[in-house]
Amino acid sequence: MTSHPGTLSASIDPEKLDRLAEVAVKVGLRLRRGQDLVMTAPVAALPLVRKITEHAYKAGAGLVTPIFSDEEITLARYRNAPDESFDRAPNWLYEGIAKAFDNNAARLAIVGENPMLLSGEDPSKVARANKANSIAYQPALEKIAGFDINWNIVSYPSLSWAKLMFADDSEDIAVAKLADAIFAASRVDAGDPVAAWRDHNAALAEKSKWLNGERFSALHYTGPGTDLTVGLADGHEWHGGASTAKNGITCNPNIPTEEVFTTPHAQRVEGYVRSTKPLSHQGTLIDNIEVRFEKGRIVEAKATRGEEVLKKVLDTDEGARRLGEVALVPHSSPISKSGLLFYNTLFDENAASHIALGQCYSKCFIGGDTITPEQIAAQGGNKSLIHIDWMIGSDKIDIDGVRADGSKAPVMRKGEWV
Image (cartoon, rainbow, N blue to C red; front, side, top):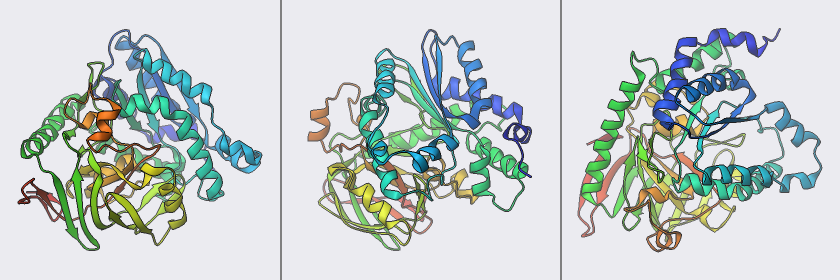
């Protein structure tokens, strides 16, 4: 007998769910009075959508517009749609979202879909649909990647996601366990979550300040299967925790977050690296990734699982084989300590230091609020339709900062800050 999703909400602490909604609005977005909000979410996350909407209007939101997705509707397309459907995307919808961002609407995404939803579908159709969506979404994505607006991502413990993580538990227990894990990682089980985030942001800002003061020209990673030098973009700037968007609002884009990150130089990555955690991408688990870089470009790539999907990702466009982000996360982060694989990049990337293929963030340059696309490219920033993070840190990885004169300074030893 299968429980109705509505009955499973009883497994989720209502007070902590309300706190998560409050944190999303007050910390994640710091929504301003009169500002509109565009929110995307799976249908299963309706209880959190309602709570966030309530807190958004209490904060003075102009208009909250939710856009929902549904797993069964998504699967219906893959199982019944004509082949040509997979080269199309709702351009009109994405153009409308981009227009809303032009008018300073904030963006909030709730994730909670089954990360392996498309694991049984034709990988070529999945790749084609993703590419079509990426192209159509580009005008809106540029507003987010360029940090034109305040935006935020939070999560909801859906049944399908919970059963993936806790397959041996009953449905209600699985949902309760995932809910507790999300609340802990999002710092909403603290007595004053807003104050907890203020302290956490301050700690991340201190790490960013130190790295920006050092002005390293590159990072050198060494460990099992890894000897990688990641050159950093000219005029790069480290960020972590809260950041100020071009509209003047300081927000926390990711909840949870444990990283400090910056922009690598797209032409200056050399060596080889092995992933330390699986990457869950569009319904496929890609495990034991090994790649080799020459002059910033991946020239060899393999994986023990999901290799075909990995290679399709790398062929998305010219920038897909180059890096757009490098991030440092201590092995002792709360998400790492949980010992859980979330199958969700928002969480798993905060369990280990990571790199991202594809599009860079213009925010991660000195003067990022005024820098032009031409300047970004000239300083080494990468451009791509994709931005996919995967984990390369562990308690066996050492990281050194390399200065312009070639001298080195320890940054991390055995996955921890020096």
